[in-house]
Length: 315
Image (cartoon, rainbow, N blue to C red):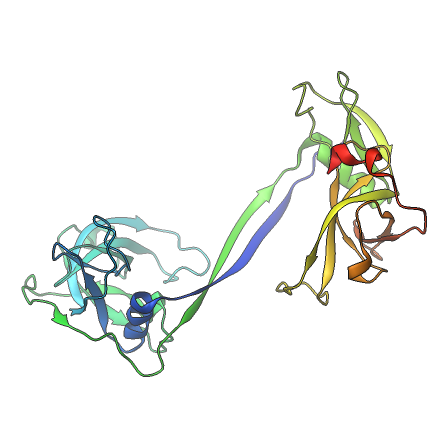
């Protein structure tokens, strides 16, 4: 019986996006300690602003400035802040309707404890010392003794010197992954530079990597089958954008490879051949990373290309 593996896993992707005129004005305004909203067709002031009316779908451009003070409409206490959250001490997540706004803004409230937070309490913006044009330019909200504001929002052109035109949002997920019995056996076989799949007892297809059950027949798979090491490129793509923390020069080729004896193609990088010479049917073999338990890339074997009919079901 193979011991089931378990390990921490991080999935991270820095999402880069450009900003339209409304979002650009909002974030640039935060850099300049100015909170902007946008007025909808019915006169409601939305903070944060959006570019299209949520009711009529008309384009919105009527920017206004609202106050940096407001009222908590609802809240939740966070006793254990996580990595990269706005504060490293316990805080409250709050929805704050800024004075002059018709909607609430989600942010955090710096308070000594949950007993110090209540719906209806008055708060104000605490600005970050270093501001770059991001929602984090509001470091947090803090309690503020005042009467509810009645001032009307004032028109704003949305024009600033050196406007922010794009942002990078790091999306990250940290979790513990347990691959299960079938994939644990697959990973351990890779340590021995072997590739192991499992055969369905009904349809007799061999799945690599194994899933522990046949996706077609719905029955458990337990019979291990060693496949490869050689295989056939079934389809591929040319990568022209360099990924962060991935030390491979572009362009390079990433392909689906049907290992000999397998009925499911797996992913792999193709090297040892100019990227524009990679083709469907190319016969390849693995090149293992030194000291690692995975294949670094696949290279051509020099064999004649496989006939399309031999791998067409795996494209």
